[in-house]
Amino acid sequence: MNTKLTKTLIGAAAMVVMTGSASLAEDWRGWNIHADGYPNTVAMDKFAELVTEKTGGEINLQMFHGGTLGSQPDAVEQVRAGALEVGNFNLGPIGPIVAEANVVSLPFIFKDVPHMFRVLDSEGGAAIAAGMAAKGLTPLAWYDAGARSFYNGTKPINTPADVQGMKVRVMNNDLFTGMIAELGGNPSPMAFAEVYQALKTGVVDGAENNWPSYESTGHFEVAGYYSLSQHLIIPECVCVNTDKFNALSPELQAAVREAAQESAELQRQLWAEREAASRAAVEAAGVVVNEVADKAPFQAAMAPVYEAYFATNPDLRPLVETIQATE
Image (cartoon, rainbow, N blue to C red; front, top):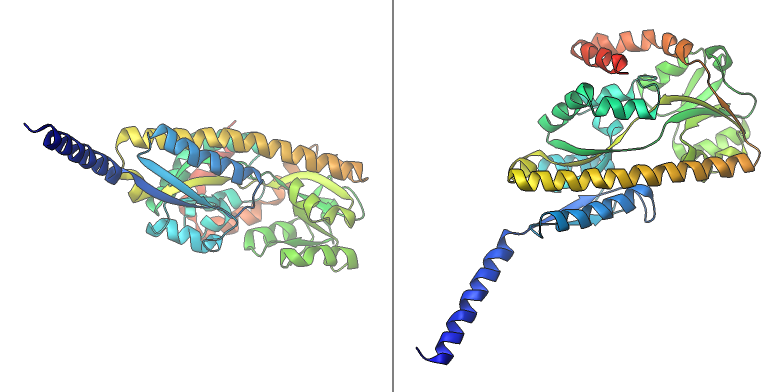
């Protein structure tokens, strides 16, 4: 055979192989609301890197941060529909869509953050994951979003009686307004951007949030008592569109899940460092921090909130009981 022709045929065959291989690669897009440098942003970039590495380039994930592809509710629906493949979501906005996921928004359902992760890694977490997957959102790994605690400008909160008569800003959710009401306080839902001025002027006496939010917003400047009630511990997930994930081979599924779980290890480490830095900063500024030694009275006060919840979600009582029974 003519040498020149042989080289041409070999080159053409190689091009076919390369083109065929390239056509097998999938390009995914991922959503994240957080800014550059935030623990979740760093971890999701690591997830994207690991996905390419662990799938041998068969899946390439491009992350879009800062909510550039839409609001969180919009992005949740985009992932469910398959318009986006991946999202890093808080379970709060997923609760109205997935009944099982909504249980994590019940006040004082978790004892602390380690307890939350033990639940998510056991029977309770499997039930939540199954409910999410059935609605188009398959969770691959769980991220830490910290615990929300009470803060105010006048006194430490150690018992429910300390909340009596206090005007407390909460997110606009019946579970959270019910929590404050059952503690004897006056729930005051308002936009987060309004809280600093409301605290400063006395429109509200207190609010609640995690360490980084309390510190970064300057709320500590006008509410110098931070009480570690840890009443809300709502995790975040790395979620993938269910149909897209189920269409992958078992090997690729394992690789993508492994990448997500490794990214979660990084995110939890970075989150712990961020929390510690925020706490150190506010304590250095003179904030008085107190541990709530006994959360049992707070949990007992939530009984009416739970019963109201079960009145409209009777099928979720076993899941809640499973979570509460997890050691």
